[in-house]
Length: 452
Image (tube, rainbow, N blue to C red):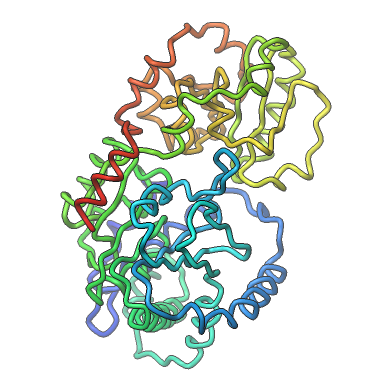
């Protein structure tokens, strides 16, 4: 997909993507990239209908609207996060991306605006107030209806010429509405920094940058070959964060060749909280399975290929009774509609992905970012190469590292496991240093000293 995206970007004259002399190419850039992702994967993967989702948004809005007068006051930091950022670690709910950063500013007042309808909260921190982003979404929808814009036919013509079909007027109105709301919010709250856990909070970042507020993004997933970070063309740097915290050296090398971060000295290597924590943690529930099975294989599931992976595992579990297959869904309800009739398929909803993988023999995935993390837990990867998706996302990584095994769609898993050579956890972890930088806590502490 990324080659198709980059080719399209090259064909577009981005100097024409302007509104009132402001180049707004960046907002269309991400929308085009996301549309390509949605075209590449099968539809119908979301369980809730659009109507049900809209009703839930409205319900959450009316529940939160009464909190706004209490929350709209001075804060030192504003976080923009998502429900999926959170994990349970030793019975405590924590944000896997910014928890350690938050521990460094425990005396600060923080407002966390979460992209969710059901809030997740950090059980260790009492200095954070939480609110859903639905109030911003609803106010944006209302405000957009009252915004009138000047003719922007040049943008639509440039897109039409290149086979890109977007609601240009609607996107521009949405952009203006978001900027009005974010700037109003920041002027009321007066934060010293806006912190995000995803590139998708671009308009909050731009609004903060315009007001001279520092901005920091924590990497949450794959950066290399991702449309949001693969920026070769000239762009307005105000749409992107001042600082970014990355998992490892490979990501920094990639961003050094991109225009995502203007000042390269503002790129920090921190590693991964969960990888650091679970790399030496054992789980007796998983380890006890070795009494019955010769190999334990952890499978991280993705909604984009869910049916295909589950069908494959169901077939292989019948052929390989000596293997234990542990399914790891992204959401607990993801597997509700599936039935499993073999005892060697296990699901442990009370354990984290990292805890399961760290105590297994192999980690199987199509293209989950967990593939970058598993070797830093000392575990080899098996890439199930459906529709060549593993090679598309991780091709060079697979080729460059002996701890990665490539599984063809029509191949039995025993064919590659039987030929695989044993390797120590320490050796695998050391080979993956460029992906997950070691000494996470020390790295976060040093970054805080440098930027706060």
